[in-house]
Length: 400
Ligand SMILES: Cc1cc2nc3c(=O)[nH]c(=O)nc-3n(C[C@H](O)[C@H](O)[C@H](O)COP(=O)(O)O)c2cc1C
Image (cartoon, rainbow, N blue to C red; front, side, top):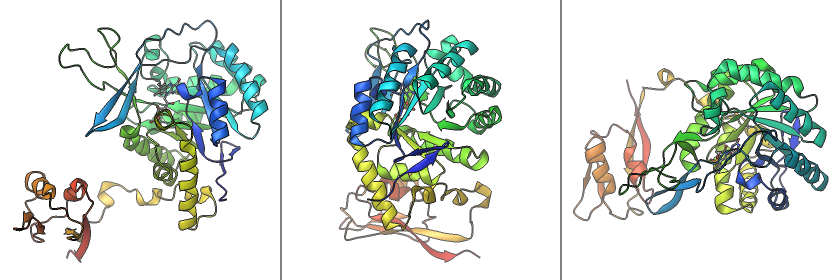
């Protein structure tokens, strides 16, 4: 068995796969089942002090279908857990007793300094391994000055993270950031300045997933109204990858990634761009806790294929290849090439090139695409369209 263990914020995880704070971690029994399936850790759903009023609405989730595929994205208007700290501290104790080798993290949110600090102290006493602070929920909580209201203001990020760090005597503190900010590295710098140990990037992306076109109610509909919510799942992976890469490149603070991780390939991409820990929410909700078996097996096989002897060796390996636009080569030419044996003659590349590219593809009489290499500028759009992946870009010459 390949060793998948990886250190994050001073803690050795048996593998980097962690359940993110979400419905999947809102019950002790669920987390226990997830640990039995093989998850390296779990962040218990965000909790608060007993006086915090958590008033949930239903339904709270709607999916975005695309081209017949369910759940290209998920939108939720869930809030933090309705279980307060008194319940969560018991869960931490029980889970740590039963699974001493797994990382039990707890996510917290408070309104005032005393709340944040009380939550930290009670969780430390209960034996939690790591504390994650949500400065990032984009709906509901910001209306009360919590969640992404903090994450969008670097001064509030630094001040609040300092409160938490001040109270934490034993365990590392991770701040979960929102992508709803012009430059996420500014927020991550504020975390670093506060002395907190790491960041989680990202929480959900603020959105409206759809509108009923017959009665004009946006979704998810709560009777006849809706509200702006948080989008998660595969569709937000590019935003999350970008945020992780920017923080890794410009700030240099340990990162636990969250946002669209669905397959082992996604996981590897996040590691390559600098994440040291991988949180999964929507995919675990969709496919169940057994998903971790595929994630672990895929990562292990990849490491063998690539001759990596530890996960550590993967972390940040793609960062040197992420450069400014100005630094990209202009001195080469690529053109599109067709694998005629695989082509199914559908003509989609022709339409795409004609109406979205540079009119470099024509169709032969037997409907095989023909590339005019003089006209092809190498934009690459046709390769994104082909349903059987039979087009690819090839380098043909250096430009003078
Ligand atoms: C229904 C739902 C509830 C969530 N609740 C929380 C929460 O209580 N605290 C938190 O920090 N993030 C929460 N999240 C955000 C997830 O932890 C995660 O950061 C986000 O969904 C992106 O990851 P994903 O694309 O793997 O789902 C929630 C997400 C969903 C879908």
